[in-house]
Length: 192
Length: 350
Image (cartoon, rainbow over all chains, first blue to last red; front, top):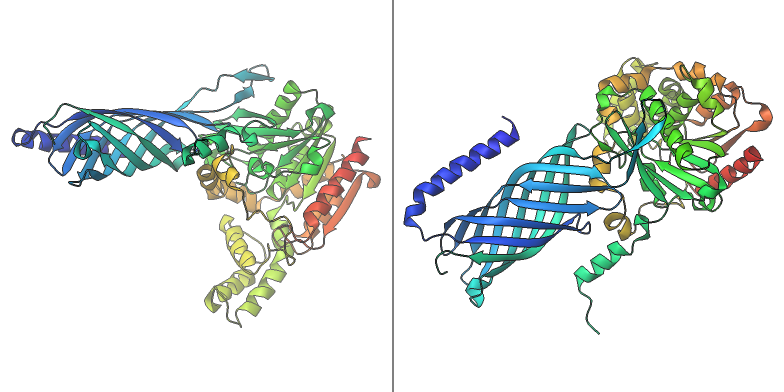
């Protein structure tokens, strides 16, 4: 089974299960987040996501959160990613949490530089550095603090280690890592 | 004064890194491959030394982070990463690659240089597998005469052009080492060395693509690539900025390492085709051959055969044996080689 099909089937099943239980749970919160996304730590990028709570208890929060990421590795490549993710976060009574996010989606990357190719007349010509579409899998583990538990503010801080796998790159999978840190703003949901 | 946070330091490191700004950096696109070209040194000199890296699957742009700094003070030095090698991107298929693909790509690189700069002279510098690329470009197939006319000099360093020939020179030493190692305690154990002995005894000539891989495993385990004298040009202590603030991508380079050699069709051509041994006689431009005395990957005899076979007049060809080197640099040979190339260029270009 193709990885994309497996991911979306798993997502659908999880959403269905959560939907069946939702009636007995407090209303989950929603959130938006913005973050620094450092591919290989230092190649700068920005990420923004919308985070929809699917299930939320005092300790566990399951979420669905599509995210858009853009980053640049100077002279090497730039990239844009759009990835729906499923997340699970365990929060302590003190407000500190650990989390796991898994996602899959689309990645467009392009070389960061002027591009030349052979022209029809046999000479060379400068062409646009058009991107290439890739399928991307991503997973991340993170930690952070939910300030709703600490001082009542609807804000959380997180730090994540992200692993990306994209294909095809020279007909193979290319894995790389990133570090992500940002702020999440919660709204709605029951009082925690 | 405000305290510097780690984030601030990181951003300062990235923003201030000269590797993102020095020299010219562009890409050539060919048959699905986006290959980086880094031009360092002095393009105004009009002299362009084009590095053809080893492998297949090595990287010239990564080497360019250190580079031939003495040469860069006088000439433009061009670091080009070949298809599915080094920091090359795109989606080039190794199964659709032949040795001729590299000649086609190199022709494009040279034409782009001529388009971008006032190129007066071009010298090709082939290292290891890059020697094969250089010999093929200069001597093989249709159009070789015209291609040769656009090149003013050729440096063949730790080079090869024929795996069958390299195997013929390397096999006796590798067999002897395997026999000796089977009698003593070693990291690999006696079974490994007995397998090597068996391979060499039943393989006087390579007949299958996988023979080269088997030979390479035995020969390199016996130390056939390692210089006997400590290297003065160790790449081991890579500065942090090369990892965190350079155009290089370590994951991409790791993926591309040996990509061509994972292709059965390419490996068959690489390991078994000896046509360049005949074709090389057509080379008639100034040529410098530099081979390591202890090199069993590309034995020095391979270079001797090249220098004797080519049509270049005697006064325009030179052979230098690197006495402390194997396939790796040893002793002061890196500096010695750079000086020799400088002298060769002075002689060629005057």
